[in-house]
Figure 1 (cartoon, rainbow, N blue to C red):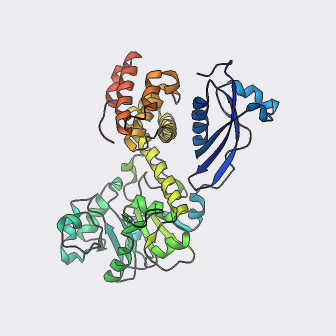
Figure 2 (cartoon, rainbow, N blue to C red):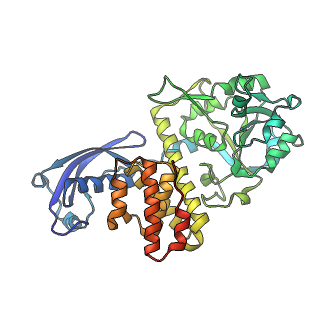
Figure 3 (cartoon, rainbow, N blue to C red):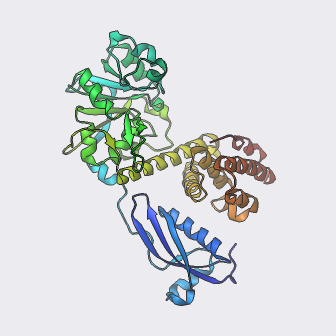
Length: 417
């Protein structure tokens, strides 16, 4: 806890955001020592979307501090002597302008200018395999393998009609199963298979020697892909497609941007049954090819993934505690937990979820007010999942001490993750 008698400390910092934009400047604060000062600066930068990359203590006498800032220098918060976060457009904005998307229903898929198709994911819909392996349905596995286990993990290309068994079963699925994507195309089955096979692997920046399997057939991934890729590159991916159709769920990053009645992250998926996002690129396309993700594209993917993780954590809180805490509190706790997870190297869904419960019950500064919690977060000898488990045990104990033992039970879920 910072005290009025703490010395005035100053430092020069550098920081980088998720789009690799760099900023730097000078900062001052009253704090007992430089490690605490550094932690406050890092947290303040994270709140504005930056990761601190450099911290150099300075002699405060060398700085010219505006007298108007002196009132703030005793409050335990760093004062940036120049702005650390220049205004900039959100990374999705440019991608959204290059897209034509709106809400529709299942009939639109079968009334379009081209035949209807789907890329089905048996990982999310295992019951589909028996239907997909019936060659009478014309399904094609995108992986060139006879191995049944690998086929069960592969996307399958299948023609649709409004009455065939696959189409009827697909339309009946809950939208948050994320079992595949649909589209309209005049191209033939073998041409579509050859086109989409190019995109089953992706090469990430700095990892070109070890490509990863790319799940573009997951509606959540395709929704991100439409915004993260450069518009002409997404148009190249969509070259043989007239329109994509994605079952609408709160986990689609495009859902919040739909015109009219956008979908919120805490909406009940059951209320979205039968609703789709119709999606197509605008503008020119580059030639289709293997997906080598650029640094800027990877940063946009990462930001969208982080937003989805925060929303997933908020949904978990809302399902278990929403009636007591309310939706806004759950969303804010998840947002604060994402920043704490970044600061303390606890980035997984489970780890952020544990931090969010602590924030929801005890505030974002819970570790500043309880040294037991602070010791857990600051212990770098423990692996992140071990610190998560210890934090959950602390939370159950702290709730019991506060008279909320009945609320402690949902927090006691430990294990690697």
